[in-house]
Length: 199
Image (cartoon, rainbow, N blue to C red; front, side):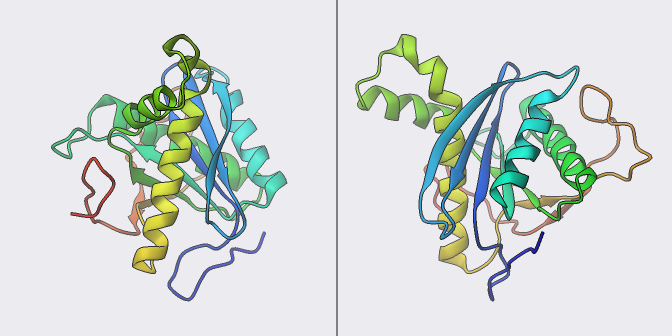
């Protein structure tokens, strides 16, 4: 796959957004012009077989995606705890699966503070009952993560987040991700506030 990169240094084309949870994983997509991110689907998280990781990699292949944005949940103080580690492990699994398929699709971790809170609020404002939120909130959160990333790429004229590189084939990621250290190349080290604006 050709990795179409703009003059500013970020991929141009269809992108996927991923919101990682312990039970469900939300997926969003954007158009080829990277203007609008839309919710796509919610997957059940299968940490034992990682079938959801393969579904996302297959989707990236079918759509000709040029980048995958995975939300990195940080606290309001910018700290990373277990949920951030889970997202990082998931990004590593996804990068490895994409590489195994021979796809040169970069995976970036992007700060996603309060994305789920915003998703619930948006669904409530749209008139959806709280009972029905669970079915779509993860994909709506993924769309929020992706929209934030593509907006920032355009505003900055550069890539955002931290690039995650696939572990070597000899590394066994196992069911939970890896005990190996994370190898991430920072594309952008800027911090973002909870409202998505650069600090």
